[in-house]
Image (tube, rainbow, N blue to C red; front, side):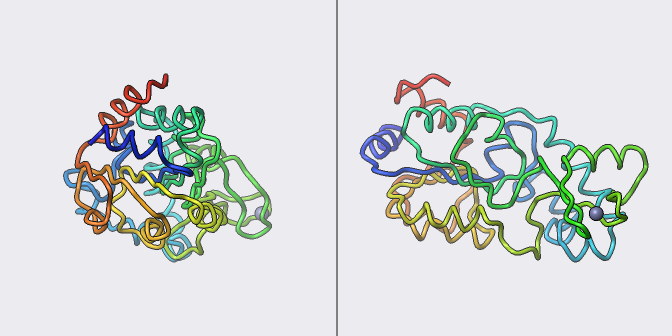
Length: 243
Ligand SMILES: [Zn+2]
């Protein structure tokens, strides 16, 4: 199956990657949807990470989410992020679309990156739109200022797409790129969160690498139900690229 993936990559005109939470678990970031993390059992992320919850219960919203987000800030890219960045550098991938907000593709050096759910590098005031570093939220929170406030008194929120928010500019730019794409490698996404889950429909061929089955498995050229790290390590070896 690795040989088939390599063959598809070599003959692709315009290949891209689409990644989800499953590729970051090897960096220690829990995937809400994977069994055994317990997160789904305790809370419903669709509610806890929603715009309505942030506005109605800002204190509780930041208490829950800052703890989660701080884990991301300390995480390092793993083999999957590094191989994907090396594949882009070597010309095998034209771009990377990710559902993850954890900065790990960015840290690994991916260039043509579409973070469709935003990222945890920056934040802004909901009242005056003043821009902040994401660290401002963490610093205020650690000093006991909750919810974090702008100098104008407005609420500072991170530049991530919460449930109930409109999709990001990156999402629409990613859709434009995907129209040109003839091969999409989907890794670590169960393809259940819309509208991102519709992206494969725009692409001629796709490959799925995910631990659990996805609704698109039957239509994929290759399906591998395994941890992404092992698979990308083998791909890098066969493509003879250094990462
Ligand atoms: Zn402000």
